Image (tube, one colour):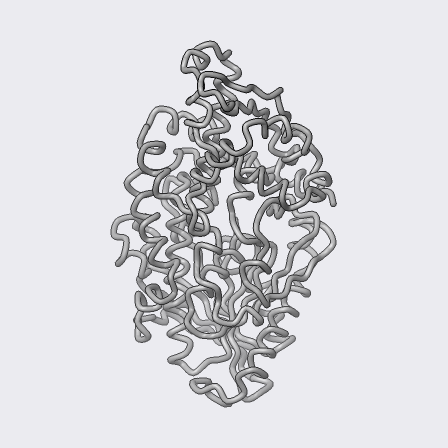
Length: 471
């Protein structure tokens, strides 16, 4: 299966760059990785936000078919990781769209998290919330992303996060903010409750539901199990300021000497996995040259240098062009793609452990390729650490999860990445024709239908659930 040409074209039309200031402060990354271990465990995370966490309503607007409530609360993230959020993002804001009439004895609510670039509420309100009132008499709560609109730092341009660490701050904040809102909705007697989001919003919703201690419908649309592929092989990787990331990784030894050792991927150190792979398969580079591994959208060249059985010798593979078609990518068998995943997880020492003099003989282009590879490896490691759903608890009832995927999505690569069905046994995956952009533009009705179906299933499974006020 190929990738959507519309996805590639749309990305080319956007000129903004991501992570223009680099990785973020090393101290911040360390604190975030430690905090990830807390929110990655539901037993620990569920105690971070109390059931009576204060939420405030600022304004109520009456409309013909609904009420629109605007509210705010202090992001719990500000309490647990102090001074890591920009001051503009400390106060979380939301909009709650409630139908004036319900079509059953229940009052269902779906929390919608925003995708990349989805500033304020109008898009979700127009495309999701208002139609869902007409179609299913379902209320919608729209949470604003940290770093967006009123919560955006003054020196940030549109949706372009300045640091890689900003994405992890956003994710941690949304997990805790979602918990605060779910507690508030329960106190107000709404239910059943569910969560959804498109693209990044779908992924953030997945992490939030992983930490909720009760069964909950979840509809992640156009997202997958980790963001590592999004920022290394997806079309969005073209918008990253790799030069700055490479420079910081090269000049600041803390990334290699300290931060790498904090990274875990599904309970296993991904960098150690890569080193073991190199030891077991000294000639693997030759095998990988014929695999057509990465989509042409990345458009980088790699020089794979793999240690031979004799320490003083280096086996240098032929130059591997990362320019294969995504159709070839998606047809690769899983074992080969796992090999590629492990190869990407091999750090600098894997090839620098060869004869040190060989490093000085490398051409400028070869050294540049090596630096590109190291930065790519590190990006994969940090993204898997903070975004891979396997690093979080399995939702209480995966059968309430309906994952909606686009077959030709160039933004969310699925090749070489663990399937959500493997991580969440019992969840359902539904595929749409087309790519990321076309699905977003033309499949909103289908997204809404999945939300309604999942909420109805929740009612059938929990017909006498306490806490939901009957109308």
